[in-house]
Amino acid sequence: MWLRRLLLIPILLGFVGLGVWVYFFYEPKPDARLACYYGGYDFSDGLIGSVTPTTGIRSLRLTLMSGETWKLDPAPDAGDMPTTFTMSRGWTGDVTPGASVEFGSCTDGVVRIRGAGAVDDNEGRRNTFDITEATFVSHGLKLYGRLVMPRVEGAVPVAVLGHGSERDSAVLFNRLQYLLPANGIGVFVFDKRGTGQSEGTYSQNFHWLADDMAAALTTARKTAGALAREVGFQGGSQAGWILPLAASKVKTDFVVVGFGLAEGVLAEDREEVFDDLRGAGYGEDVIAKAREITDATGKIMLSRFKDGYEDLDAVRAKYGKEPWYEKVNGEYTGYLLGLPNWVIQIVGPWLDVGTSWEYDPLPALQAYQGPHLWVLAGRDSSAPSANTLKILRDVQARRSNLDVVMFPNADHGIIEFIQKPDGTRVETGFSPGYFPLLVDWIHFKQPQLTVSGPIVYDGDKPAAPAAP
Image 1 (spheres, helix red, strand yellow):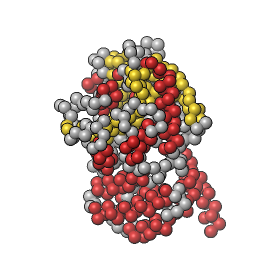
Image 2: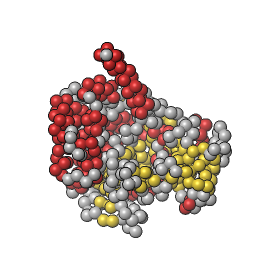
Image 3: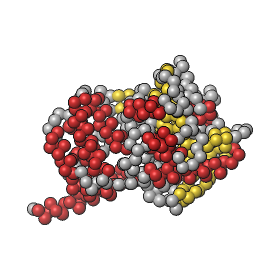
Image 4: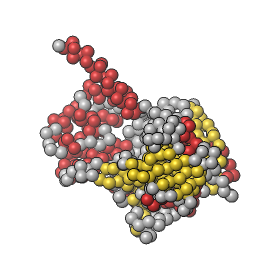
């Protein structure tokens, strides 16, 4: 019996490894024939949008500057090379009856929207941008990017697009490479190390990634030449840790961070755990107990799965039978609580991507003196923003060119959602005003908003609601 159990261990680990590979590493490639649909579009009623690939080999995503977005899937009778697509609002998966998007030929660059409410019976034409491919070297790795410039007179700001923790190709999937140039802003987009057409192994070592970003900005400035009025960074999520650090390594004219954290990496997991427990109705007495758990799991992560198991066993024994224990999730704590220590010790190092668990972002944030914008999500389930807002407001007291805008009802990505009775969230689209905010701030370095709801913290001034 013991021998059969012993033999089951490598089989179990094999299945675990396969599942992890599919979840984290497998990247289905979009159908390259649909690439002629990708781009920025000007619509007949003044709307601006982008078309990019998305999950699914022949699926696309249409995103408008208003924040409305749809997943486009080939219509049932679309054939092998689809031109007509059904529309599903946001990430709901619910097809809008009677709504469709129809693309013209690859040469005419026309798209038509039918039956989609406010954008019904609308025709768009694909923009023509000047695109220059560029490779550059960082830490001995050749990284692939491209400069996307609008065809306008005079010099324009150029944003070098930073990355979150995603593993897919930014050159393929990043919608801002079309939305920003359609609004008169140049973009340098590149595949980070280990993704897309760039060399190397995927990593979350922030120091390496900051060096890569700095090298990308240098390349963007050189490639754009006199066409660039200024060159800075824009990025979301994990980019909040990386972009201020990169700005300390290279001349940077501006930094824009979306839905990132101004505190360390361990705080992301900790604050997620606390938010979940508060959402379930538990008070600060339980939060104090949960902090003991996150301290124990954080110790394991800091040691890269070498130490901390005695502390983990201690909190399991101490709180394992309490009613709130099963609701502890977070970025990694819930997984560690539910796995035997021996599995963590084997699988953990295999999944380690060099994350800078010890990194403190505050020194770089305080050191950068250029114009700086942070856009936060008030109901961020992946990077809870309450502590970050406090930190940024403290920095603002000494820095009048740091602006903060809070979208109070948005989740991670500045995405709106519907919350179901069971607590799950269904994402419906980007927050109105988010994309125009990015455009206006990059152009004018002022947090201008024309929608109600977001809260503007303008430099060292008190918070004020957006104009109606």
